[in-house]
Structure formats: structure tokens, C-alpha cells
Length: 292
Ligand code: GUN
Image (tube, rainbow, N blue to C red; front, side):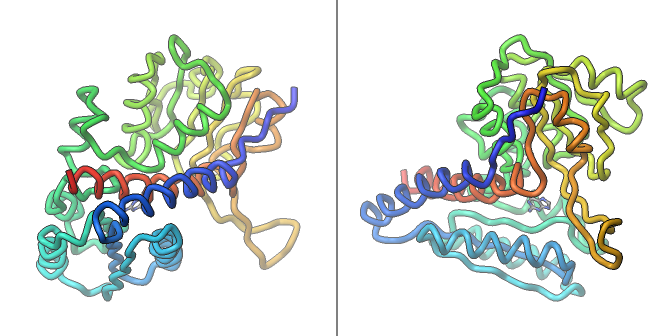
């Protein structure tokens, strides 16, 4: 079997088009554009690119976007003060602090400082808790997990009763995507670095989500024939075919897995584009809820 390739770029463009129309309606109704403020502390090259892309994407759908680039030595108190100011600013609908933060800043404390109604990452314990008690309708739900669910919908995968295996237990992806799958009545296993016989656990999966950050860890023979494979990993590795160059790979050995899977996401062009599209959706949702 050769897997169907789930085109995240195309799907993300559809989501953005819907958000763009929603933003235009919001502006008509409320006389202002939804606003997204993105904060980055430090100069991590990949994070700088991600945050610039988030600001650009907001502007491109007609939102107000603002990127706050703070030096690596910014103190925790200074960062918290900026967040409190944005919490109080009625023109701000979404606040996103790019992770990871430098070691001298307590990221839990920073996430806790964000007004939950503006927490477009969905990382605040209030939003994580709403999701955990089955009230995603009241929460802001993390963007990458929502992107994974949109790709599963695109694949047409029946989730009720399906066996889903999520590799990775992070607060950003693993735990929330497991909650979303559970809400759709899947039987969910969260696997991680201490899981015994991970290949055998994965072979049980009708839906396999890899979110570990280990290049090409999931091999072809870990994939059940016909399974849907969602690869959240974005890993830069040296390119053996082009000495001195690098390339992006996922957490899944794509060519091997594609021979067995029913559907699979590529890297790049799979989950990645949907993360930003879902961030825009969350920002519009936050603006609408806050406007009543
Ligand atoms: N770092 C990696 N992914 C994310 C994300 O989705 N949001 C934030 N804020 N930081 C990240």
C-alpha cells in the first residue's frame, strides 16, 4: 500500500481563508481588528523565524499583529509586567509567549500570568483544565493538537472506538492531543520514553501521532497496515546526500512508513502549516468571545 499524503499546506490555506472572512466580519461589527501580540525572549534562530511567521500570518488575514522581541537577559519581572499590560489592553485578544524561555525565567509562572481568555496557545491551567474535563467549548485549545485533529478529519478517519497511540507527553502536544482524541471516543494510549516495547504498542494503532522530537524514530515496521500517521516532529539533520547541508525530517521515517500507512503527513508541509492557521482561529475566537 502507498499512503495518501495529507497536504497540510493546502488545508491551512483553507483555514486561513475562513479566518480572513471572519476577521472582515469582526471589523465591520466592532470597528477594530482582532489583535495578536507575540513575545519572544532571546535569539534562538528557529524561534525567531516561528514568531515572525506568526506575526506575519496575523497581518495577512487582516488582524493587528505585534512582535515583541526582548533580549535574552530580560528579567522575569520585566516579562511579567509586559504580560500584565497586555492583559489590561482591550485591543489585545491573543497573547503568545514563545517557548522555550531562557533558563532564568520560570515558564510556568509566565503562562499563569496570561489572562486565560487571551491565552491563544491554550497552555494556561484554566484552559488545560477545561479541555481535561471535556469542556473544550469553553477553552482555548492548543494549536498543534487542533491541527492534528483537522488532518485526521481530512483523512476521514473514524475515531470512535479507534485505537490511537500518541508518542510524547508534552503539555504542548502529547497531552492535549490525547484529550482531543478521547473526546472523539478513541481508545487512547500515551507512550513516552519509559514505555516498554514501543514498536509493539505503535503496531496496535489505527491512529499514530508522533510528537517526540527524535528524527525518524518511528520505523516502517512500527506502523499497522492502513493506519493514519500524523508526524508532529520537525528536526533539522545533516543531509548525507549534500555534505555541509541540512534538511528537515519528522519523527517518522517517512518513506518506510508511507509503504504501510493508509495516510501520512509529510514534513515539512504537514502539521506545521496548521499550527499557525489554528493560532489565527484561536485569536479570532478569543476576539469574538471577548466582544460578547
Ligand atoms: N514552542 C514550540 N511550539 C510552541 C507553541 O505552539 N507555542 C509557543 N508559545 N511556543 C512553542
